[in-house]
Length: 289
Image 1 (cartoon, helix red, strand yellow):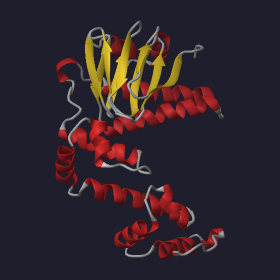
Image 2 (cartoon, one colour; image 1 turned 180 degrees about the vertical axis):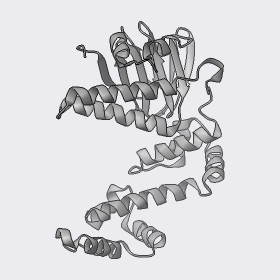
Image 3 (spheres, helix red, strand yellow; image 1 turned 180 degrees about the horizontal axis):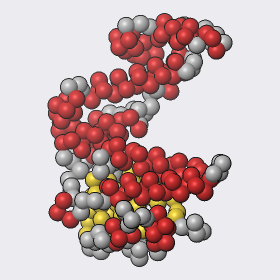
Image 4 (cartoon, one colour; image 1 turned 30 degrees about the vertical axis):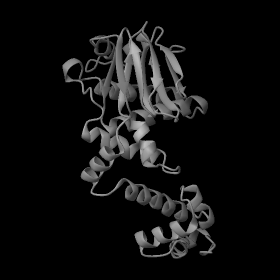
């Protein structure tokens, strides 16, 4: 594999800042980690959210700006050289021809949440492998690059008229809301924050979330926080740290919610978890204050 055959980087945009992004001599793919943004490329404006893949052909540049209010926009970027795409190609799939055939220099597509998550995790694994090489490093990296190229090709198999241009579609909105909540579950997530993040009224968010999940946004946030607390407790974290790390405002609120959800107190759950791990030498920890 040639030197600099691929490049991985992060793009962070805060507030009203505008960032210019260029592809150079690479095919550049950009995935959203957190936030949403608008990008301008060759006179065309594209609005991108949590499930958007963005592709720039070689020699293309764009200007992007966050629409996430006061929250920073974080993007993940991977660039492939022409030569690497040829190396990764096979008789079944020619990546160079596939991406070169895209109808414009800069194109965005909306992908399924699972496809976005897998691709993002593969890129993160590849970046980790660069820092800490392990046995069979070159083979492993080539395999990761092949998988990433496959998932990107699948994401961009629909173009032109087949593209989903409205990330606010009901099913995509629900997926984006749930993903955003899970990504920021240790923080305060008031409706005003979701309203700013997705540029949609809180009334619409409440209605569509209730319709799609059968529960309120607040209930989903609490349940997700409690699931995280249960995991922390099972890992042996002291209860006095659990509720603050999961983003609960106070112990009493956490205690009541936990008991209602699991029909036992946090301390009782802690003792059960310790008993299950007794063969590992777990010692019983603190009870409720």
